[in-house]
Image (cartoon, rainbow, N blue to C red; front, side, top):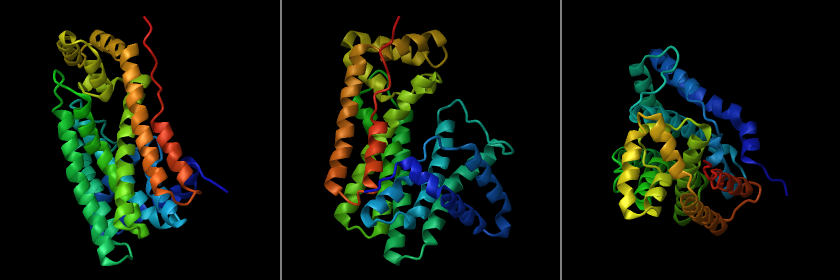
Length: 327
């Protein structure tokens, strides 16, 4: 039986996804030249490192054996995350790198349209029954509410009283909700019933948490330390707080606040985050999320041409890449 990796699938359909986005921009009409230029600039600026736009294709392929009809949803995924990533950069407080040729205000307006109006236009243009079109549109609207809730929880993270449960609640909104949205949309488009659609949403939700944990690790491994600079309460930091003695929590919290502006504080905090007890806790919880995602996939089943790529994505996201800090 032939199987595809998610990267191979993306290589096959990347031009189709690009064409779908180009068509959506062209469909705005001649009076929207500035909008097209601004969104195109934002899309060029916010290039995705990993081609997760194949997720709806893999879900639709698993359900029907044919991924192609979900290409418009892959376009929705790209547009949504292009917007969300730019808005997330702005929310972090250190500003976002403005796309070449665009002012800050232009990029902000483009991100709003890219994440909301344009995805809805893509969905509304599909030749599907009204009930399906309405359900897909509702997914986009509901996702934004959940994602903003998660982002607000993230922004208001309380270092002194942070917990792993509270961080997961934020991750479930800011990352779980959009992945749950796109997997549920693919299931709806495929004609899956309510029970299977909700299982696909559950898979997307858990995968979104895993992918956020993956991103958290990448940030430290890259040396960018953006989370430390932004004072973000990550899951790893919550693990450090829960694994330390009650008397040491205030010290770690204070170090987290100081890390925003102090390279020395960032180095000390990084060392605490990479302590053996913290990494053991993080790896244990990472494995639990991985097992949960695999459990949902095993329950769903489907076309074995496409399911292996979903399992591959889960295992990549759930990898333990951090290692113990050495003095």
